[in-house]
Image 1 (cartoon, rainbow, N blue to C red):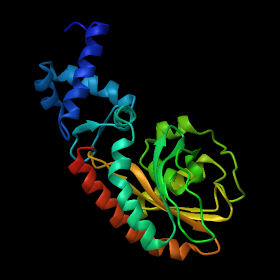
Image 2: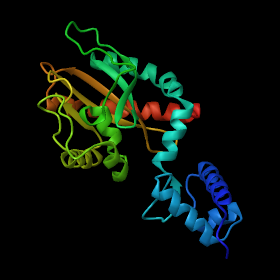
Image 3: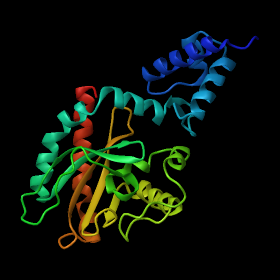
Image 4: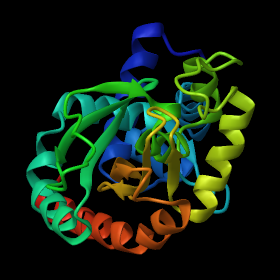
Amino acid sequence: MPKDEPNDAVSKSLRALLVLAAHESLGVSELSRELDVAVSTAHRLLNIMRLHDFVEQDMDSRRYRLGPAALNLASQARGDHDLVAVGHRHLAQLCVQLDETVNLVVLEGPDALFVDGIQSRQPLRVATRTGARLPAYATAGGKVLLAHTPPSILRSYYPAELRKVTRHTLPDRQALERELELTRERGYALNLGEHLAEVFAIAVPVNGRHGRPAAALTVAGPSTRWTRRRLIAAAPMLTATAAAITRDLREYGA
């Protein structure tokens, strides 16, 4: 069988992405039928797109779905308006419940971008950072999202040695990878003075329509009020709020 011409291969790859976007997941044979191409051609397209993280394969089912690179492009094209519109009232409720500053964070390359936040009314409080970009490895929200980022992309984001922001910042990428593995296991990330020495925070993922993290929900407070134990005790409340945001996002079609 002759190889696809470059333009033809590009066209088929783009069509494959559109087909995958319309389904939760597809097998190779299903994709070949949708594209009306040979199974070998579908498999070659998937391998190329997987190499660049535009698709990923479930190791149990062997089926393919959109990968983080494709989802990140879609998120950037759509913008964060839907997330903020849906999530803001949930932030307000959580801020009242905890009486601490809460934020919504998305990943923008190697940075954590704060897209919305509500500030605590306590005299001693952490300010909201809406619009700010911080090194993701030094924030709770950033670490939650990095925990679901492919290792190849993580390596492209950061050198072996990480820039120290405070004396508590993780020292290198190896330490970050261990922290991200722990974050995946327990379902939340902590920031114990890693960006500002006197600020502690916890974050949980907010899943989008595809069932993968679209954002992080964080609560931050002064270290004089928050201990590791208190942060962990707040995790179930954050998780419940994140689940409510996810349900509303799905209804909203985000």
